[in-house]
View 1 (tube, rainbow, N blue to C red):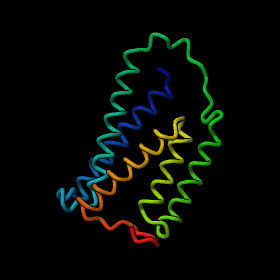
View 2: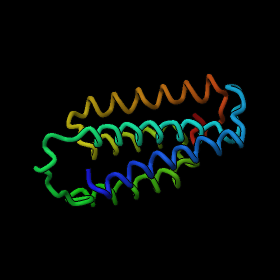
View 3: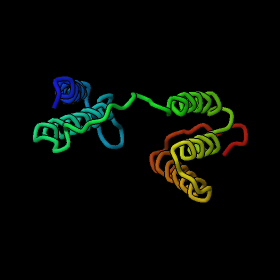
Length: 153
């Protein structure tokens, strides 16, 4: 493991620890009424777990460490990254007018298509299923008000 990798994984673990500790100071709240530290708590746990796992895995050694190939940060996918940022910006702009269901469905179709899914039936089915589950979870189960849009659904 190179020095840069070690610093990166240790930094991820330490950042997760800071998130974890500070979220406890903010208060977690309850399941029905989450506090300000509820989401950062789980982000901190995730970062700690990923950082710790990466540190242990890299410390134990990689049998093919000498055969590493340099990879560009974005490579040929820089256009996908830019297109995704533009699509998510458009999502934020269109969300109040089109509503949660339509705008989320369109965003997911775009993300699945640019993510490499080839079959349109899979893309449309996965997007529809994701939007329906999200709507059920947030709107119907947790009573979160989602933007309804101009068509009021």
